[in-house]
Amino acid sequence: MAVSNAAGGSGGRAPTTGPWRNWAGNVTVRPARSVAPASTEELAAAVRAAAADGLTVKAAGTGHSFTPAAATDGLLIRPERLTGIRAVDRAAGTVTVAAGTPLRHLNETLAAHGLSLTNMGDIMEQTVSGAAATGTHGTGRDSASIAAQITALEMVTADGSVLTCSAGESQEIFSAARLGLGALGVISELTFAVEPEFLLTAREEPMPFDEVTARFDELVAENEHFEFYWFPHTGSCNTKRNNRSQGPAAPPGKVSGWIEDELLSNGVFRLACSAGRAVPAAIPGIARISSRALSARTYTDIPYKVFTSPRRVRFVEMEYALPRAAAVAALGELRALVERSGFRVSFPVEVRTAPADDIPLSTASGRDTVYLAVHMYRGTPYQAYFAAVERIMTAHEGRPHWGKLHTRDAASLAEAYPRFGEFTAVRDRLDPERRFANPYLRRVLGD
Image (cartoon, rainbow, N blue to C red; front, side, top):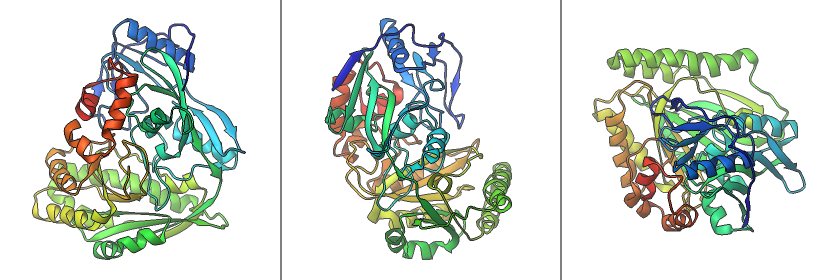
């Protein structure tokens, strides 16, 4: 473990006050003050100053978590100046990046160097640190989450010291800190494994629910990246298969791409959700129309342009990670729930996969995983639907996504994660006074 007491002044830009809200608008906090450090030294100084004043500390990314994981009434660390690529090492196959750097900037810079992450989620607005800390993932037969691609990290701990760790240096801390929920310290920089840029061919096509579920294991096994969306109140799904390609690149046409990704997936969909919120009884009919709106298409492009897509319709979300073998049974129960209930669900259910990894608090820790995500349009009552879905997921040994809505607590999560105690022991060691705690972390990790 390499530790230094970083020098610095008051912690960057002058402290400010004012409310902070997350992307979905369901979390609002008023920190005592907030700062936007531009360097590790300024970040460390800010943490030391907060400790001297008896304030808790949380770092906020871009607020794409639906939980109050970043909420604080103490010092809020803002990410907008702690950005940029710090090193590209082609020989080692790594890139080191400041924690507040948006994934969009990281991906664009990697592309300019002819490099790429192996896998990623479907949005690029998150900061790299926020995405890793909450377990952001895409879908993959063999390639795992953002956190699983981290090879080293730098973190400011509770006393303002700067700690560096990797698989070969302070391995126990590194293992936990890759997906740390902000509970161990404030990440200042991350090093990711990257590879030479490659092409992906995306094949998107509608498929009946019964066919997708009957062929689920086959579709996962035959494709590097498989996912699908089921439209509640219908028997229809939209599938997406991404596989490496020799090329040539053949991206979507500007007009056709705009129609699919902006007009239909965002503009028309927003109107449909608004109509459904105003007249819930109309949602099943709208769902049947929506499920037929997207047509089959195939295109080939560099990875981040295939993995990611714009998300302009705001919503709240709950996502659960289940053992891969439970996928079809859980989906069947979810479909039966929607059919027998009075719930009116305008958003599709998203289904993705991940291989087992070795991160203590990863939702895929120690087991091949399927992810089932349910959403509701912002402003629509969601609590009863999410609670009913959560009962199904918990019965199938589900683990909730750390950044998405759920009601689980430390006692139940300790049973769901075999290495839960390993993480909390590192937390006790690094933050015994709970400088980085908040009510959400007390609920999910204990106190």
